[in-house]
Length: 347
Image (cartoon, rainbow, N blue to C red; front, side):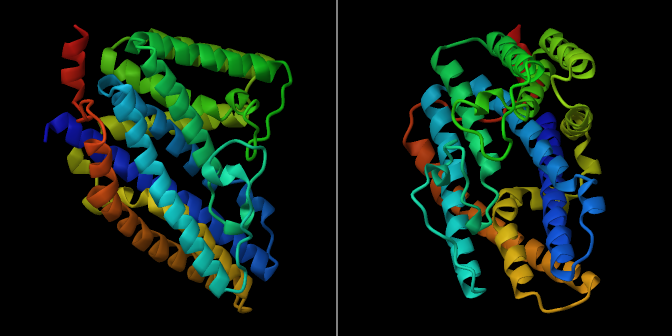
């Protein structure tokens, strides 16, 4: 394995694990406070879960910059579909079993949002935080269109900046988009998409050494956020934090990354999908324990159950879903070339 490739993947995988842990802690403490009647406002101000989610978004943007460098449209679409949907549907099945056992069976509705389409509604009874996957699939769809149109990587970088400008102008105009449940018309204008754009343009700059799109993005976002309220200053601060974390995770030396933490990153997608239904089931049981005991129970069960599901999901992906995607397309599989190889191609 090339050193740059190893370094990038270990760092990003470790950061994925940290992001997932932040989300699990957020839900565990929040529902423990609800179960015991403790105050939740002060804790929610920490925005642990929000930070974790937006780190995932920036990572997704960065990884997609790598993927679209070397994948054709068929390969790109099949890779994304097989990575997202099988684990997601399996998580819905797990949630149904767990919540039914706890006496809170989910309500099965014909809502298309369960297929990760932006309908303006969510089925929260499953307690699977799939609203983030709706944004992911929208981002992938837009990138797929860019790949289909055979745009160059440089052109896609500037198209991403143009998308950011549209979002910022919409924010300045006072267009309000509900973050959790946007419609198909609303979702392209949501401010949270800027985290994807930030990761994509930043990673592209690292690969191509063309930092002009990134500096243009940072300048426009900062000025329009600070002086025109186009993006909330809270999001601006989180954007700086998340982008910095991803940047460091890409360049950090492999020897500084604990292998167990990088391994946990392999299971982070499954952990993210499965933990909330487990935490919610314990919350509904409400055994009357003190706050610290509830936090220990929800956090430990959420982590252990989520990691176990993540390991199963990762095994199924490597054993079945990824090979199916490889066999079903004739495009060259994305092999995660290191930064030096990409820069050579650019020359």
